[in-house]
Length: 216
Ligand code: GRF
Image 1: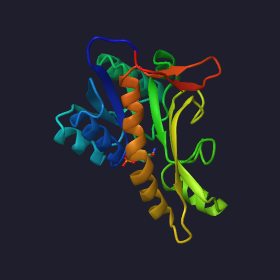
Image 2: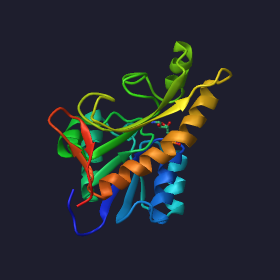
Image 3: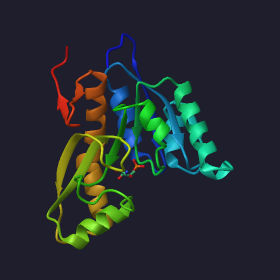
Image 4: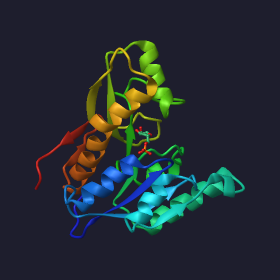
């Protein structure tokens, strides 16, 4: 990504927005350079993430599939709204929406997602929210963690940008494991990945492997 102005980021959310908050704070503190969070879009009107956006002075938009006659019409409007902000990068920060293929095609390796497990473990269809951590505990893994990846046509299968392992403890519940993964991995990894994008340091090769290159 080479640009002379700030990197424009649209963030898609569905819930509490703690990952969004990590991005807001990192941009504000200058840890992510030359970046502007230009809009936050939620499919859920009650998402606390929208309040976080408002408090940070970022336009918050609610777009719910429930308010559209068909999924196709919703998908069209979602793309139209995102396009209107001319983003360099789209970040899915706890976004439960299925991303329309037209959007993936329009923004190749420019949509990032954070997943609360070490992909390819505990990912794909039906692995979202606490279910991810329930599955990790049921399998008895000794480490789990988080993954930031680019979004492609297949769910949770795009090029992996960053991963961080987090210890699983004997007495963990899905809730305690979820919290530790957020604190120790997600809230650090997502700002770090966006920073690398802002610095133009992410390159994806023909095998869909991500390389972190030196800044120009
Ligand atoms: C996070 O665990 C994220 O990895 C997952 O959904 C959760 C969202 O949390 N995709 P928040 O809304 O950022 O607090």
